[in-house]
Length: 619
Image (cartoon, rainbow, N blue to C red):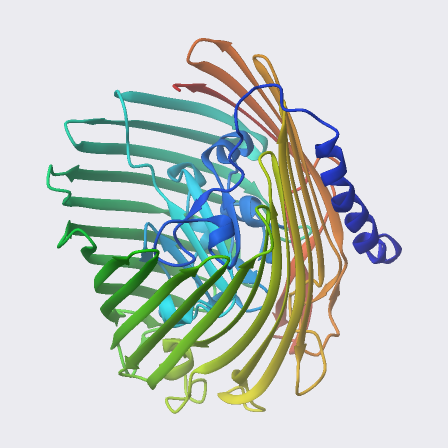
């Protein structure tokens, strides 16, 4: 495996380099322009095309989501440019998303602008979200602390729910497959008289598979409901609401059978209005919940993470320029959270922030400048900022350079975990500086984007000799990303090559659980009523521990998919994941023997070969 993964960069670079030549050799006979320069909101809080954002962005659109029809967000994000995913087993087991080598608690997950995370761990529970509830995903790589505040060190992932448009449209799907898995979903959406609506529900349950060799099957079930409503007034104002709730249970291994009951929920109301012809104002009130009730052989715990947020955002159009000004107040609350009967010393904290951004257009030079000040009750004040410059070399090529700062907030676990000696209320926030240089080529039927960056992280929080968290470490993360995509005739091609060098400055070791090389290729073809597609994802080795003693080999997997529209409004989809039945692991656990007092590591194994078939009704 070592010899194969060491050749990965050269082979991938050759494949990506020849992609533009293959595209140029083809002629788009459809007579229609293919949009490979989508609108992006996450990068700058306002709609911009991908080449205008001056950021490294990836958009996974509705067509891609339908083609791939992933069971989990891990399947969707794995191998995307700059993104690495580790899982502790399959189907609802703990997942971590690393963006540009930063930890899962140093990245932000948004659902329609609402942040969802656990205040106790600092990370989002990616494994508990159903991809069928969303129509688009945006991945912005690089620091966004000056726009989103704490934890936007490596990047931001935002998931968008459908708004509803046109005539009433029902959609229904049902299917199943390996591991006695069953999956159902239904939605109803449309628009009439300025009112848009979308209602959806889904259910997934499976007996699962073992998370370790020789173990028992570990099941998972998830039921999700979504309501989204909005109404636009004749004067340009709009009001709306969103409510998404998922709940279920997942079995896992904790030196014996264990189970989590979980709730993931976001809810919001908003109102926006044009104050003048050039000034638009929006107020959003939201709540996010991450709740988990755990029963394990050696402990029980209940975590009730809730975050309330009020945000006021103003957008001013000044000719070719745009200005964004805003203020935000949020409060984290742990409710009745406890572990083994012990409660946290502190159970709430507030955060106040103001932010500003200028988008200045002096063609062919563009500038994006942003600044944010956060005042947190627990760890004090933080000032973050960013500056990005873009220069249009010609009609198709844009050169960009940026510098940005960000910070990761200490979590409630790190500050106040109730076990003696396992927390530190005097922790400071981790801080980071990032430089990036990139260039993008944008054409009618294809694009490519190349970026290189370096991130320095100071006051990195890590356990000392007594396992008490302290600000001692420093990290340096360097990397490069190459992404390309094309649509020619009935072919859709996407490619991503990622190189990351995440180093612990204190030891010189590679940061735990991060691969350094990653390649993803997605190929799809339309054949009349049929569609065929495949994805190839390959990564080199990683280390499970900071000492780089527990090595996890690299892997390569192939996923196949097919669709058949066998009648108007009716279609059949089939997916085969990990066709070669590759056994691989991206994380390890530790089993403690109470007799010998020895700790033995074991691999968390991922899904082997698995097949799923589903029937769909609707547009």
